[in-house]
Image 1 (cartoon, rainbow, N blue to C red):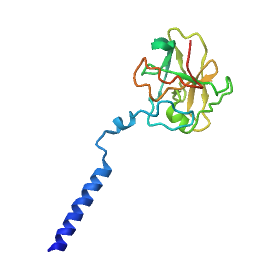
Image 2 (image 1 turned 180 degrees about the vertical axis):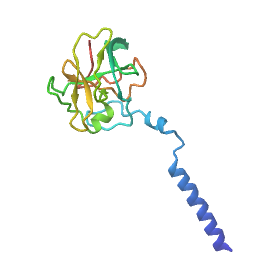
Image 3 (image 1 turned 90 degrees about the vertical axis):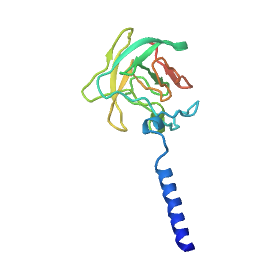
Image 4 (image 1 turned 60 degrees about the horizontal axis):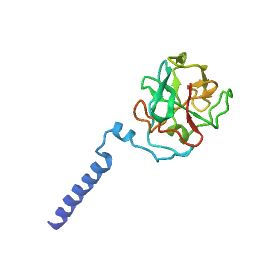
Length: 168
């Protein structure tokens, strides 16, 4: 009798642990919204990123808090950044791997081109990323990125050493 009670109890505990381990209680979208470290290194991985565009992209100049008038892009109107370690007109991005998790590339779908909207005075273009073949948007020859901790239009949380919001 005692043996049966131990087996039933063990099965109950095992089932409870399996259920607890398989579900965090949070939705996948909530988990992907988790903030990363307050000052990420260029190569440090992070928890989430604003979605890069899957189609045509319009880049505009808008006032963004203390950053002043900077470029914003995509259907989400989020602030875009440059990585000062990228080389102008090189056709390459040096932000790869974990860096690209924290600083997702602003991309367009194959066959699409970025469009300059209000206040954009420079030249928009694209480069083909060597790591995955996607088309990354450039401004005046420098690749553009979002910052994963910017959650709403008007956020400019990605200004760190080697990272700048893009002035028109």
